[in-house]
Length: 357
Image (cartoon, rainbow, N blue to C red):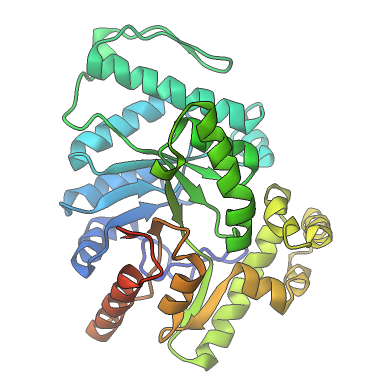
């Protein structure tokens, strides 16, 4: 994720805002460092335009939305954006989609909210129907509970492409959405608040149940994550970074949609308290609810010297694609990051063919 070393600060503005004019150059740097892919989010800039810029100066780098909002766009609009990027990148797109929480759907996008899991399932099936129409010349005929598509005319039909199989990943945290991943998606994008305990005890079984409903192999599903990391070159600097990350844990704690990830550790009451403070806009009081046990359970904390080994120990057996970087401002930083990437990729604790973003 650009810029290198970016940590979404939750309540605070990023130290180095992304300049979209540097995306093409930054993507080339990421490819030269040995990364397998670039993931972009939908916060302050359009993710599809970011990846279009990144595709220009790269040849091997996977290009992922992590994630793009699904419901504010129709399935046909998202299908078109993905189809165009897949053509431009010659088959390197990974389409990561998220549902967004109720308040944002209603108050930021001005839309009616419906239960996200069944709607996401219908959304993905509708997109796939559009792609089949374009690629295989099938009549468009999707008749779902949320989307009904039955019109495609030559003027708006882009036709077949060389790489029509576009992997679809879903951002998921609750068991219903995990089930949809198992049913119809190619990968799951875990929220940074997901601990190994929550992944193993709650999410994996839910994905497996979903896969069983459509007779799919759950082991074919990619598990992807940008872990919540606090890291710095030395312990003194790490203390400052850690407090910023603690505030981010507090931000997530105050979001009821993430309650299950805290409840598995017995912190449901803290979620309710943080949510109350959030509604009262008492933001500065929330980080105090994040004690050291909670902080170190949710975040991975360590210096540059040991952060890669800590991430491997925590997530190595659970995750197929991991997002990680540090700020790079000189050749020494580049060398240090390369060594971290090598350690992340080559550890005995990792799954085979680990991908780094």
